[in-house]
Image (cartoon, rainbow, N blue to C red):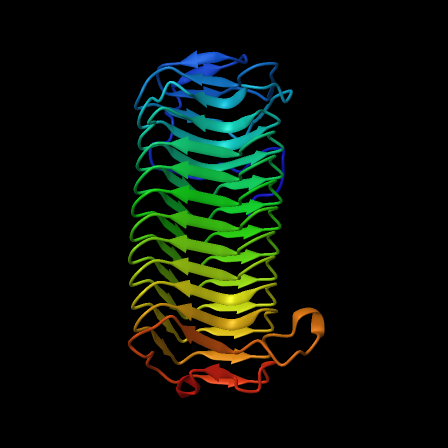
Length: 337
C-alpha cells in the first residue's frame, strides 16, 4: 500500500509515457500529446490540464500540490477526453486529485496517491474506468468515485476519507483485492446490475462496510469488520455472498434483501444486531457459521439471532452452525441450524 506523500516508485504499466514525451514544467499546462512531469510543482490553480484523447501523463514519481482552491484539479479532464492514462505520482491539496467529467471514457489511473484534496481523491464520470494500485487517503469527500459502466478497481486503497471510500455507480462494475478503512461514510459501495466484489476488505467505516446493489450482484472472499452499520449488505434478486466474513459490526454482520439470494460458506461473529439476515423469497443459506451475535454494547436482552430469514413464501433451504447468539433460538426458521 502506498502511504508516502513524497516520491512514488515508478512501476511498469501499459501505455507508459515515452521517454521522448513532452516535459511538463509549470502548473496549468495543457497537454495534447504524451507528457511527463519534470519536477514537483506547487500550484495556485490546476496542476495539469488534459487537452486531447488517447494520451498518457506520467507523473514520474513527483508531487503536484495545490492550495485547496475551489475548482482546482490535480489532473483536469473536465472536458471529457477519452482514453487518458495517468501514471505514478502524488496529487494533493486540490479540490479533486483527478477530475474526469463529461463522459471521460476509458480513463486509466495507475500507481497514483491522491491525498488531502478538499473533495474527492479520484472522480471519473465515464464508462470503462480502470484504476489500479491507487491510494486515496484523507480527502474531504469520496476517496475513489466512478459513475459509469464497466468500471474496474483492483489493488487500491481508500482510507480516512470524509465520505465513501470506494463508490461506483454503473453496470458490471468489479472491485478486487482492494481495501476501504476508516472512512466517515461507507467503505465500498457498488450500485449496478451484475456488480462483483471479491477479495476485498472494509473495516472501521462509519456506515456499511461493503454495500452491493443490483440484480445478480456477487460478493466473494471479502471481509467487513468493525463498521458502523452492516458489515456486508447486498440488495437485489439472485444476489450471492460466498466465503466471506463479517465481525464486530454495529448492526448485522451480513444483510441480504432480494429473492432467491444465496449465502454460503461464510462467517458472521460478534455483530451487535445479529449475524446473517436474509429478507426475500426462496433463499439458500448453507454452510455458514454465526457465533456470538446480538449483544449490542455487550448487553444481553435475549434478542439477536445468529441467522434470520424472513419475507419468504417458499421456505429457505440449507443448514448452518449457530452458537452463543443472544437469542437462544439461534436461527429462524429453526431448520436453518
